[in-house]
Image 1 (cartoon, helix red, strand yellow):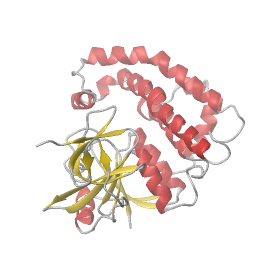
Image 2 (tube, one colour):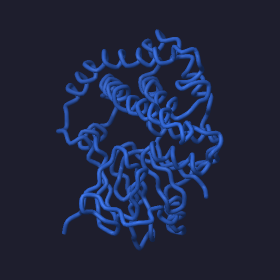
Image 3 (cartoon, one colour):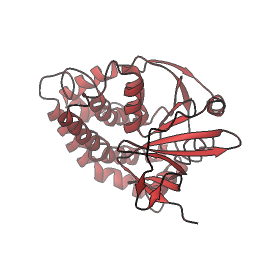
Image 4 (cartoon, one colour):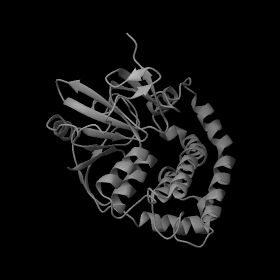
Amino acid sequence: MEAILHHYDDSSFSEKVRLMLGRKGMHWRSVVIPAFGPKPDYTPLTAGYRRTPALQFGADIYCDTRLIGLELERRVPAPPIYPPAADGRARALLEVLVAWAEQQLFRPLALAVTGEHAARFPAEFHADRAALHGKPLPTLAQIEAAGRQQRPECELQLALLEGLLAHGQDFVLGETIGVADFSLYSAPWFLETVGGPSAVLDRLPLTRAWMARVKATGHGHTQAMAAAEALAIAAASAPLPCRTGATAVLDGITLGDEVRVTPIDQRAPARGTLAAFDDERITLVQRSAALGEIATHFPRLGYRVSAVRA
């Protein structure tokens, strides 16, 4: 089944997935989506979820880079991008590093960069990001001030990354590249992709050299695809059988219930019928005249499930 990535060029989380695809040596199709809402050709596939990116295989849509990585590892085991499943310590350490990369490292950096270049972004972008976090629309001056406030935190976090690379090995967890590297790389990548050459990174030689090694992974083999073609592929396909073998119960919610699935740090819910629920993933199914049946998958970590009450 063909891999289709729904993404946009300047998305740091999309870059993480593009590198995963490159590491796997995969051929994949590229559907470029808007950086902010509305996303009329995207949200019908994602049950209304609107964060970027999502990876499509037929009528199965995988959301969030955590689950996308696990699904890629399942479908294309070699070369691996995760520590062995039996190595619980390495898997736990990886989760700690990914959480740091996406929260303590990336968030202040993103605020600093978008604040410094706030005037370059359309007003709709700032409105969209404020709404995602449930905050009022800030003024341009407030965005710029927030960016200045975050700059020292950003530099301290990047210094920690430099220290993490001081073990003398090529990659974060040893001599083999993997998800920890792709997760951590996306923050300094975003810094220079949006802001241009960084004097901060020039003072971090280990980070500079490591970034070059990660970048050399490449993005695999890609070909552009129109959104309409991706929708047509979904409509002509059927989802894979759900993995859950028993009725799942979560705070009174059972399989077959109408639910919302929401990131714990944003207000961007998906909505559909709960079709599967286990320690790794949550699966929603939605049906429409246009697309037939679509299965949209989310990771358990970082998401909450709530019932849609009549």
